[in-house]
Length: 108
Image (cartoon, rainbow, N blue to C red; front, side):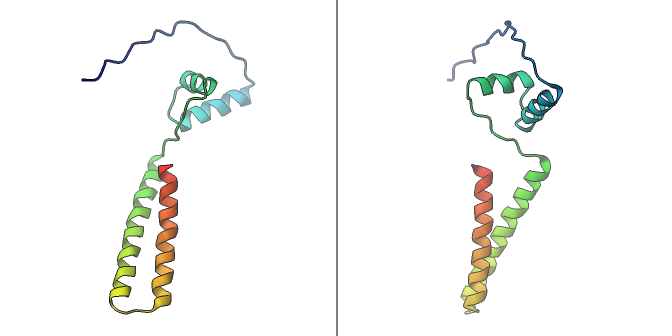
């Protein structure tokens, strides 16, 4: 059984001065990773990891790319099994590998 999370009472405030442009930039960065402004600044101050969150559009594109990659793999296998053109099979395999490279970027 996991231990219950310890409740941390953060009641000490620190004031930071930003230019309006700096504040907007920090707010946008916090929004990109799905954190509140306070949590973003806290994590940045302690060099904690902040992973980017994907937008709905990016998730849809990722799923489509994954489907395309699987389709190209199937086409390459079909061309190979039917004794098709080596050039065509090589081109399809290279395209599939490029898609795999882009998909791996989503996981890192």
